[in-house]
Image 1 (cartoon, rainbow, N blue to C red):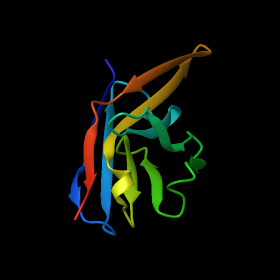
Image 2: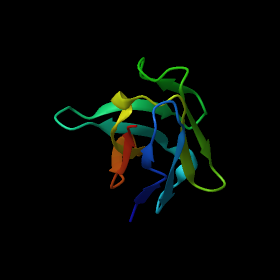
Image 3: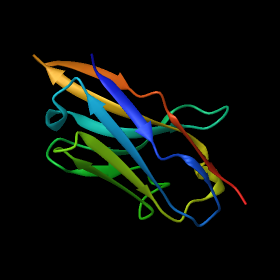
Image 4: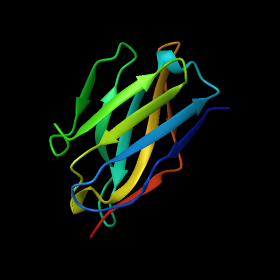
Length: 119
């Protein structure tokens, strides 16, 4: 059974930093594409950043140059380093994994971690 467990959320002042972690189990982590999504109240869930199995990554325009996604395959963990946080970054952040088995994509989600940016 695949599990994704996020941690690292919390309350931070504007301009501050947080690092989110997502520990995966029950899957071949190195094979999966990993991503962070977020959902603010009253808004749709949106992609924040994604890192592929080969290490290439891409970002939403709103977080480019502020956020960095990385992965440690030895620890089955993906990270999101968030710098220069803004109030509009406030949301529940979700870890996502996509594993392709036999040409069929399997999509997994974590339970989410709250990030609040406020003075």
